Length: 93
Image (cartoon, rainbow, N blue to C red):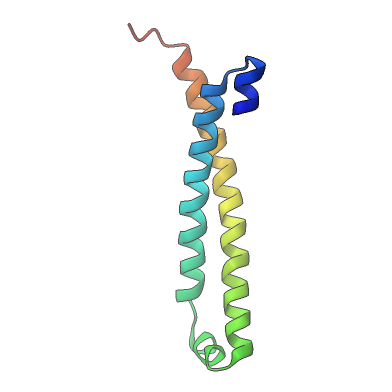
């Protein structure tokens, strides 16, 4: 954003898009990561009894959470960019 500001580009749009992407990514990553940890069946419970099981469960939750965060970030940035463009064409006053 700072580089956009210094270059005279639309830094307000960039700020809105980045913040929205961050928010969507955070929510998506946390929700899916938590669901991956909670979603264990008897196998998941059995795996938690061993140190290797903990590594597998935590690794899987982190991997799924990161992927969900990336998808959420992309969706949030796309939606924010589209809404910003639509709102800039509206005559508010």
